[in-house]
Image (cartoon, rainbow, N blue to C red; front, side, top):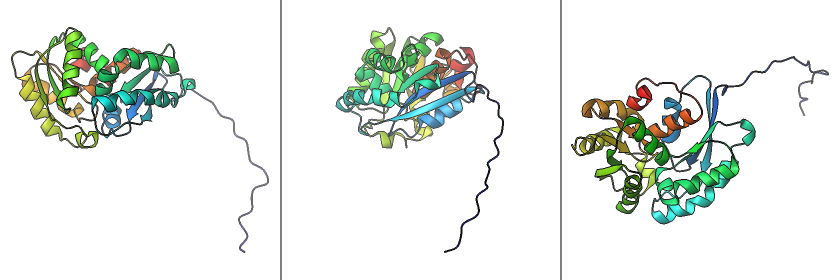
Length: 259
């Protein structure tokens, strides 16, 4: 047998200094669906701010999106939230599923998160979208979703109940989240313009964290001359604002430029 290398008899001990770490301005927690292919890439771009750190936890879910599978997801939320250690000192936390927040209920999701991370501001893409639309002064929105009509209809009703009229709606009619993540940016842009050009709406909301919407927002706004928001886009903005980070982001649309 060939002898191994000799070990040093002593290990020199080095002195070191510490600072506040990579999240010296804000540490933000995020619960991401295990089937989501898009969210982390989008938020890495939208939240690329020095001193802001993003900590993800993957949440078990069914790839097929129906009211029934979304309701079942509620039992996985606390399990995922527990994987983001309270000792990290997060300043805000988000549950990243627009349809899940719609069907499970925003208040229920918030209550679950508060039970794991008491005192930490929380949000989700639906709550964030409402806050973003209000900030932009949009109260008649064109809605774009990938969902089947039952889930899309529930979201339309939720927005209407919050005082946001939804006079025009378009959908890709796709219930598989793994397929939704493959819908092209060109398709999303085309759908957004088709909905947004209707004179009955004064803005557009592109719903679903799996849709690759972040890079189409500025172009859609330029073509429509109306504000455009999307699930990941609004969620990133709302999490940053809840965490006390007011920075603007170039190329991220009117929401980040104005508010």
